[in-house]
Image 1 (tube, rainbow, N blue to C red):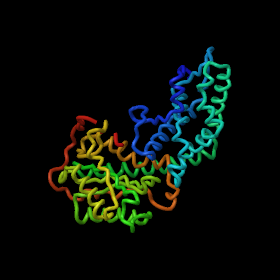
Image 2 (cartoon, rainbow, N blue to C red; image 1 turned 30 degrees about the vertical axis):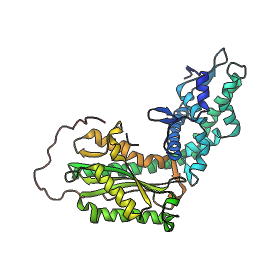
Image 3 (cartoon, helix red, strand yellow; image 1 turned 135 degrees about the vertical axis):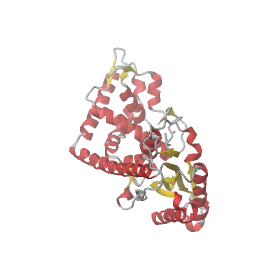
Image 4 (cartoon, rainbow, N blue to C red; image 1 turned 180 degrees about the vertical axis):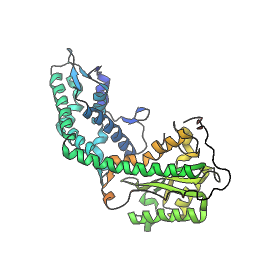
Length: 370
């Protein structure tokens, strides 16, 4: 529904470098790869909403001012963001979600970009009517394109794969809390230093090298570092032109025996950096800053704390799937980029007092994963 008058300031915002964050629009961001992924995530949501509707998105009033609803306004803000034009540069060996690709093929056309980025000059002029017509024609083309049988088929394949992976992760969590009364959840990123900061023999890391390092870490965790207290894990392998190969990993431990999650994450990171990668690796300890997250799904979780368990499923583990859903490596057709460890074994003997059914715990606060 067309309902909002677009101001000069908002028109200026269309061509700014703003990027969407969980707390609004911000100029401050950490890496180009992460912010582009965040922008694509928000853009996909806006496009899905626009494509589902048949309403007119843009209009103009009797003073030749552009009028748009929230979805239309968000679409223009994001479509005018220069980051969208850098997808192929930032992710050269990746392919976009089919809906996003169809939209960007239209939006990044030179005439379309010129239309979006130069709307302000037509504010108050008789040409605004022509601008509005062209914008609505763009939306109509997008609606026609993304609802074609070909795009629908590819989108369904993407969704089917995402649902399968999501189901696998949720089954893992459910099995964990059936088997253990407390689970310690550790979320870390395993990275590599820039090539010039690595030993010469490790300048050019291949997928085989990275996979071998990860398997060596898992072996050491089971045999040396944590032994039986280390239960299982879930991982996502990504590659960025600037960051290279890196793993996003969630490790699960027996929370009845270990509880210092920050120290455990630091121990894993140090072992990865110094021993496994021989000084070539780095690590980001997400547990060390968990108190800064608005929702808590890492650290020590009791089996009765349904709130934290839901956050673990939806946000912590959901993050492992989200980027791959939007931006999938071309190499994913040949190599695994996501996986989990084995499900914990069910209890086969009834030792000790059986677990009583009890009321769910209420978390004192709640933390969303980055």
